[in-house]
Image: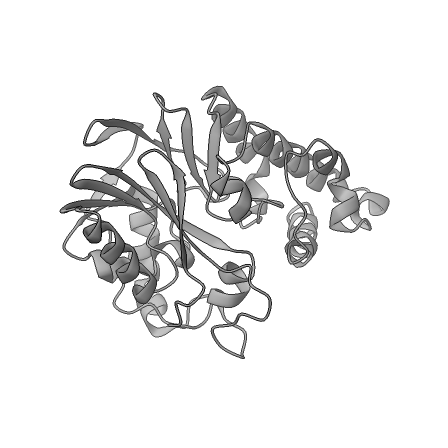
Length: 296
């Protein structure tokens, strides 16, 4: 896969990002596919925590080629031991797993179970997300059911299972640094609704995230300039809460549902909690349809 737009972002001490997408005209293939339409069009970032010869890779990016580039970068920095943590089961987060087949791969039990159930279809490119295939799909080797402490050299990390975006979510909190690696629990401009029947649960989960009091939040889908400037503040969580509540209201309020994205999130934009990125207009329309359907 073409890696010309993959860039390495220096985000914070001991934290780097591997960002691809948000490039006008960039496409992996002409036909509809999950790499372009669900990841590169919005921008996608995987992360690595590094301390000495140890690294933790958070999500394996959109292809084995991307993941291999991540691994080369880490090994070039002297890393000799890598642990992979998956934020959830969606393909743009697990597609590069084969590049880390000799590493420990950590995920929630729900992630492992979903990947096992979907493995044949994912490897054939016939899952609900369609092509391209992810083959071979390397499964997690360690599963978590509860909050679990991890270490990367001297760095203390808490892996926290959380039901936001998907029931199998797993975020990473570094309490000493005030850092939260958030996966898809939050996005800029807006969250992508994949489980509309669980939005009330997601709101409770978002309140748990706020309780961590992280000062630097790094979502997998965000503005690369914001990520590079120290990440997002608590406002990203608050914007996601507000957007989620308004989606639930819009299911019964035609005037609210008729607003375009910029108007729908005007207050959060004015507060500078989020930035406006036009491709999220399509995400917003799809979100409204999903929530209306789930609301009956």
